[in-house]
Image (tube, rainbow, N blue to C red; front, side, top):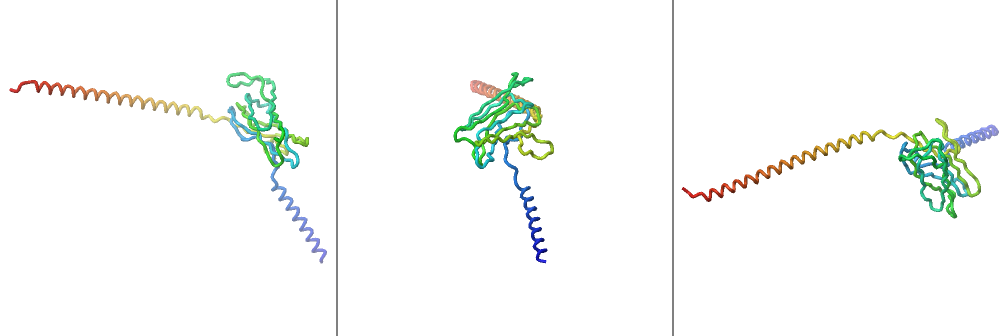
Length: 242
Protein backbone atom coordinates (compact mmCIF):
# COMPACT_ATOMS: atom_id res chain seq x y z
CA UNK A 1 0.00 0.00 0.00
CA UNK A 2 2.84 2.35 0.90
CA UNK A 3 4.59 1.50 -2.37
CA UNK A 4 1.48 2.37 -4.34
CA UNK A 5 1.23 5.73 -2.59
CA UNK A 6 4.91 6.49 -3.26
CA UNK A 7 4.55 5.51 -6.92
CA UNK A 8 1.48 7.73 -7.34
CA UNK A 9 3.28 10.65 -5.64
CA UNK A 10 6.32 10.27 -7.91
CA UNK A 11 4.14 10.13 -11.00
CA UNK A 12 2.25 13.23 -9.91
CA UNK A 13 5.54 15.04 -9.29
CA UNK A 14 6.84 14.15 -12.76
CA UNK A 15 3.60 15.24 -14.39
CA UNK A 16 3.67 18.54 -12.50
CA UNK A 17 7.27 19.09 -13.55
CA UNK A 18 6.42 18.46 -17.19
CA UNK A 19 3.50 20.89 -17.06
CA UNK A 20 5.65 23.52 -15.34
CA UNK A 21 8.38 23.13 -17.94
CA UNK A 22 5.87 23.46 -20.74
CA UNK A 23 4.35 26.58 -19.19
CA UNK A 24 7.73 28.16 -18.61
CA UNK A 25 8.77 27.24 -22.12
CA UNK A 26 5.82 29.07 -23.60
CA UNK A 27 6.25 32.02 -21.22
CA UNK A 28 9.92 32.56 -22.01
CA UNK A 29 10.26 35.54 -24.38
CA UNK A 30 12.08 35.17 -27.66
CA UNK A 31 15.70 36.22 -27.67
CA UNK A 32 16.44 39.76 -28.71
CA UNK A 33 17.65 40.29 -32.25
CA UNK A 34 18.71 43.09 -34.60
CA UNK A 35 15.73 45.23 -35.67
CA UNK A 36 15.02 48.35 -37.71
CA UNK A 37 12.98 51.13 -36.14
CA UNK A 38 10.45 52.35 -37.06
CA UNK A 39 9.19 49.12 -38.60
CA UNK A 40 6.86 50.75 -41.17
CA UNK A 41 7.24 53.54 -43.74
CA UNK A 42 5.67 54.90 -46.95
CA UNK A 43 6.77 53.99 -50.46
CA UNK A 44 8.45 56.83 -52.33
CA UNK A 45 9.20 58.80 -49.18
CA UNK A 46 12.28 59.50 -47.09
CA UNK A 47 12.82 58.45 -43.50
CA UNK A 48 15.21 58.21 -40.59
CA UNK A 49 15.68 54.65 -39.40
CA UNK A 50 17.77 53.11 -36.65
CA UNK A 51 19.24 49.62 -36.62
CA UNK A 52 18.97 48.50 -33.01
CA UNK A 53 21.59 45.93 -31.97
CA UNK A 54 21.28 44.27 -28.54
CA UNK A 55 24.14 42.30 -27.01
CA UNK A 56 23.01 38.74 -26.15
CA UNK A 57 26.31 37.40 -24.83
CA UNK A 58 27.00 37.25 -21.10
CA UNK A 59 30.76 37.52 -21.47
CA UNK A 60 31.61 39.06 -24.89
CA UNK A 61 30.91 42.49 -26.41
CA UNK A 62 29.68 43.34 -29.91
CA UNK A 63 32.51 44.89 -31.90
CA UNK A 64 31.14 44.98 -35.48
CA UNK A 65 27.75 45.23 -37.17
CA UNK A 66 27.19 44.64 -40.88
CA UNK A 67 23.90 45.53 -42.60
CA UNK A 68 23.19 44.50 -46.19
CA UNK A 69 20.67 46.53 -48.19
CA UNK A 70 18.30 44.36 -50.28
CA UNK A 71 19.34 43.90 -53.90
CA UNK A 72 15.73 43.74 -55.13
CA UNK A 73 14.90 47.14 -53.60
CA UNK A 74 17.69 49.67 -54.32
CA UNK A 75 17.60 53.03 -52.55
CA UNK A 76 19.03 56.09 -54.29
CA UNK A 77 20.07 58.07 -51.21
CA UNK A 78 21.57 56.54 -48.06
CA UNK A 79 23.39 58.54 -45.38
CA UNK A 80 24.56 57.62 -41.88
CA UNK A 81 24.62 59.53 -38.61
CA UNK A 82 27.87 59.51 -36.61
CA UNK A 83 27.85 57.12 -33.65
CA UNK A 84 30.34 58.04 -30.91
CA UNK A 85 33.23 55.59 -30.79
CA UNK A 86 32.23 53.82 -34.02
CA UNK A 87 33.41 54.13 -37.61
CA UNK A 88 31.25 53.26 -40.63
CA UNK A 89 32.29 51.92 -44.02
CA UNK A 90 29.95 52.30 -47.00
CA UNK A 91 30.08 49.83 -49.89
CA UNK A 92 28.30 50.38 -53.23
CA UNK A 93 27.29 48.22 -56.18
CA UNK A 94 26.49 48.80 -59.84
CA UNK A 95 22.88 48.65 -60.99
CA UNK A 96 21.54 46.83 -64.02
CA UNK A 97 18.69 49.35 -64.19
CA UNK A 98 19.42 52.98 -63.15
CA UNK A 99 17.41 54.53 -60.33
CA UNK A 100 16.00 58.02 -60.79
CA UNK A 101 16.41 60.40 -57.84
CA UNK A 102 15.38 64.05 -58.20
CA UNK A 103 15.63 63.86 -61.97
CA UNK A 104 19.09 62.23 -61.98
CA UNK A 105 19.83 58.68 -63.12
CA UNK A 106 21.93 56.78 -60.57
CA UNK A 107 23.91 53.79 -61.78
CA UNK A 108 25.18 52.67 -58.35
CA UNK A 109 23.67 52.47 -54.88
CA UNK A 110 24.74 51.58 -51.35
CA UNK A 111 24.85 47.82 -50.86
CA UNK A 112 26.37 47.40 -47.38
CA UNK A 113 27.03 49.38 -44.19
CA UNK A 114 29.66 48.20 -41.71
CA UNK A 115 30.06 49.75 -38.26
CA UNK A 116 33.21 48.94 -36.29
CA UNK A 117 33.70 49.80 -32.63
CA UNK A 118 36.69 51.75 -31.41
CA UNK A 119 38.36 51.31 -28.01
CA UNK A 120 35.81 51.11 -25.16
CA UNK A 121 32.88 51.63 -27.57
CA UNK A 122 31.80 48.01 -28.05
CA UNK A 123 28.28 46.99 -27.06
CA UNK A 124 28.67 45.38 -23.67
CA UNK A 125 26.51 42.56 -22.24
CA UNK A 126 22.94 43.54 -21.30
CA UNK A 127 23.14 46.73 -23.39
CA UNK A 128 22.22 47.78 -26.92
CA UNK A 129 23.28 50.37 -29.48
CA UNK A 130 21.38 52.12 -32.30
CA UNK A 131 22.87 53.03 -35.68
CA UNK A 132 20.78 55.77 -37.39
CA UNK A 133 20.43 55.89 -41.18
CA UNK A 134 18.53 58.22 -43.52
CA UNK A 135 17.13 56.57 -46.69
CA UNK A 136 14.98 57.48 -49.65
CA UNK A 137 13.14 57.52 -51.87
CA UNK A 138 11.91 54.20 -50.54
CA UNK A 139 11.17 51.63 -53.26
CA UNK A 140 7.68 50.54 -54.28
CA UNK A 141 7.80 47.11 -52.65
CA UNK A 142 5.91 45.56 -49.75
CA UNK A 143 8.96 45.17 -47.53
CA UNK A 144 12.72 45.58 -47.28
CA UNK A 145 14.78 42.81 -45.65
CA UNK A 146 18.13 43.93 -44.19
CA UNK A 147 20.27 40.84 -43.61
CA UNK A 148 22.77 41.56 -40.84
CA UNK A 149 25.87 40.09 -39.20
CA UNK A 150 26.83 40.71 -35.56
CA UNK A 151 30.42 40.04 -34.54
CA UNK A 152 31.46 39.55 -30.90
CA UNK A 153 34.80 40.15 -29.23
CA UNK A 154 35.29 36.40 -28.74
CA UNK A 155 35.07 35.82 -32.52
CA UNK A 156 31.52 34.56 -32.55
CA UNK A 157 29.39 35.81 -35.48
CA UNK A 158 25.59 35.77 -35.33
CA UNK A 159 23.89 35.79 -38.73
CA UNK A 160 20.55 37.61 -38.68
CA UNK A 161 19.64 36.62 -42.23
CA UNK A 162 16.44 34.55 -42.14
CA UNK A 163 13.56 36.13 -44.05
CA UNK A 164 9.99 36.05 -42.70
CA UNK A 165 7.48 33.59 -44.14
CA UNK A 166 3.83 34.42 -44.73
CA UNK A 167 1.75 32.97 -41.93
CA UNK A 168 4.74 31.18 -40.43
CA UNK A 169 6.44 31.42 -37.06
CA UNK A 170 9.28 33.83 -36.49
CA UNK A 171 12.64 32.34 -37.56
CA UNK A 172 15.37 31.64 -35.04
CA UNK A 173 17.65 34.29 -36.55
CA UNK A 174 15.31 36.78 -38.24
CA UNK A 175 16.63 39.62 -40.38
CA UNK A 176 15.40 43.17 -39.74
CA UNK A 177 12.31 43.89 -41.85
CA UNK A 178 10.87 47.28 -42.88
CA UNK A 179 7.23 47.17 -44.01
CA UNK A 180 6.32 49.62 -46.80
CA UNK A 181 2.83 50.89 -47.61
CA UNK A 182 1.57 52.79 -50.66
CA UNK A 183 1.36 56.55 -50.41
CA UNK A 184 -2.12 57.90 -49.59
CA UNK A 185 -3.79 59.74 -52.54
CA UNK A 186 -4.58 62.81 -50.43
CA UNK A 187 -2.44 65.34 -52.30
CA UNK A 188 -5.08 66.15 -54.98
CA UNK A 189 -7.96 66.87 -52.56
CA UNK A 190 -5.62 69.00 -50.51
CA UNK A 191 -4.67 70.97 -53.63
CA UNK A 192 -8.33 71.45 -54.52
CA UNK A 193 -9.01 72.60 -51.00
CA UNK A 194 -6.20 75.13 -51.25
CA UNK A 195 -7.60 76.35 -54.55
CA UNK A 196 -11.00 76.83 -52.99
CA UNK A 197 -9.48 78.74 -50.10
CA UNK A 198 -7.59 81.01 -52.53
CA UNK A 199 -10.79 81.62 -54.53
CA UNK A 200 -12.66 82.52 -51.36
CA UNK A 201 -9.85 84.86 -50.40
CA UNK A 202 -10.04 86.54 -53.82
CA UNK A 203 -13.82 86.99 -53.54
CA UNK A 204 -13.44 88.39 -50.07
CA UNK A 205 -10.71 90.78 -51.23
CA UNK A 206 -12.88 91.89 -54.17
CA UNK A 207 -15.82 92.51 -51.85
CA UNK A 208 -13.66 94.46 -49.45
CA UNK A 209 -12.32 96.57 -52.33
CA UNK A 210 -15.85 97.34 -53.52
CA UNK A 211 -16.91 98.34 -50.02
CA UNK A 212 -13.90 100.62 -49.68
CA UNK A 213 -14.65 102.20 -53.06
CA UNK A 214 -18.24 102.89 -52.11
CA UNK A 215 -17.14 104.35 -48.81
CA UNK A 216 -14.70 106.71 -50.52
CA UNK A 217 -17.37 107.79 -53.02
CA UNK A 218 -19.83 108.51 -50.21
CA UNK A 219 -17.23 110.49 -48.31
CA UNK A 220 -16.47 112.55 -51.43
CA UNK A 221 -20.15 113.22 -52.00
CA UNK A 222 -20.58 114.32 -48.41
CA UNK A 223 -17.65 116.71 -48.65
CA UNK A 224 -19.05 118.15 -51.90
CA UNK A 225 -22.43 118.77 -50.28
CA UNK A 226 -20.77 120.44 -47.34
CA UNK A 227 -18.84 122.74 -49.69
CA UNK A 228 -21.99 123.71 -51.62
CA UNK A 229 -23.80 124.38 -48.38
CA UNK A 230 -21.00 126.68 -47.28
CA UNK A 231 -21.11 128.63 -50.56
CA UNK A 232 -24.87 129.03 -50.32
CA UNK A 233 -24.56 130.30 -46.78
CA UNK A 234 -21.91 132.82 -47.83
CA UNK A 235 -24.06 134.12 -50.71
CA UNK A 236 -27.01 134.48 -48.36
CA UNK A 237 -24.99 136.63 -46.01
CA UNK A 238 -23.79 138.89 -48.88
CA UNK A 239 -27.33 139.50 -50.25
CA UNK A 240 -28.84 142.78 -48.73
CA UNK A 241 -32.03 142.41 -46.85
CA UNK A 242 -35.23 143.75 -48.52
